[in-house]
Length: 526
Image 1 (cartoon, rainbow, N blue to C red):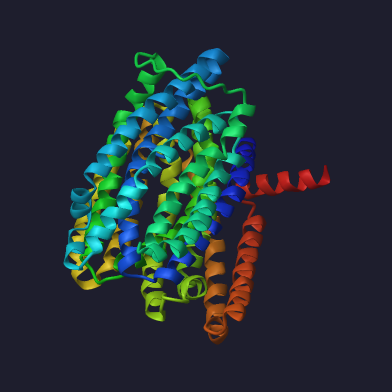
Image 2 (image 1 turned 90 degrees about the vertical axis):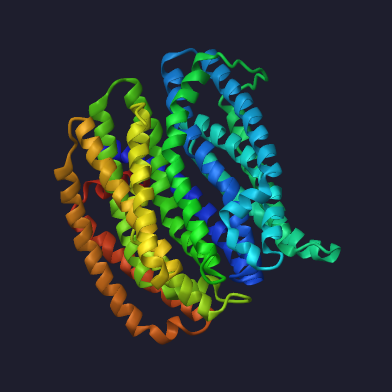
């Protein structure tokens, strides 16, 4: 299994570097939002407005379309001619550009009733619903650019190109920051709200995310053929895979819809606190879960195309082990250091100490489900590679039911915190269900290997937690002091804890870690 681990880890490492750049820029973007708008009226409106194209993006672009396209494209690339493969890619780009353009126009026309459905309580605050509707109409075309970017990313990943597609999202954040801040400073002079500039910046970022990948796509030999063939067998197969996948992903979007609706009924600022906290928990999800998923997906698809179920199971188990080894210490760190992290990153300008505490409590509860959220990004592509999407659908509906039940039982007492807690619980249930179904469906995989690795991770994680708790208490005054001092102390604490964790796993010889460190050592020796 070490050969497979090394291959995926190498690709995942490449993706992780690019994703790290993107997530850091994403945090800078959130810092700008926090400093300029704080947690309340304008940012609440932006979050809800951006959530609408984001819901559609998760359904069509980075969810069903991406997974279905990679499965079929990899099969074509493995078993068909180069001409047939590139014709399929061109046809998919044309078809979905037209479909999503029509969907975007419909969304712009229906923006007001959609906003009212998603955030009906905004009508109680003068101008908030109208602002949200305006921002929604501006940002909806983002869906087209990000969907095309997802198809291009699928092509490049299938060709073994990981860095540029992963780095493209960094350019989205860069475009959002530069374009958004510039317009946010200019537009108020013309009587327009500053937050409108950030919405236009988001649209510019989506265009940049697509454009930055095109030169690499051309180097791979792709030549765009602008024609539409509805009856193309490859396109039909992608749509056939997508339909149940969209249905399977729709419960997740229903969950987001439900959570947003509940959040808008809580105290003003709740939507912002939830969004800031989730942005932070997305950092390890992106660096570990998404990176490993992107690296593993073409490998899984290639095993499926060759009917190599044994190789697919080994890839999945190895990938899950790596996810556990990275997300469990990240969970411990986020839970124990939530408040100083929020204080350092966001507490300035319009973002108050009260917002810090509210966001830190939210982050702690989101972090509980981090391992499950990241693991699901490995498990779901296995079902797609097997061209069986009904079980992710069932799992998603179970997650929706769990989410609704927990929120209804706890929201009166815990307000927005109930939403973060229910999200983590539903993700964990999703993970358990998918793991059991895959075990039965594939004739069993090495659970003993996973449990042995998990026991090592828990022991190392426990030691790391002890060091974090002691350090947090010992440096409590420094962590609450000046920004530079707090940053330095937090960096020392995190570095020391990560070093201890890595040393213990190396000492206990976790195979995935050994495979990665061996490759790094051999590379330096070479």
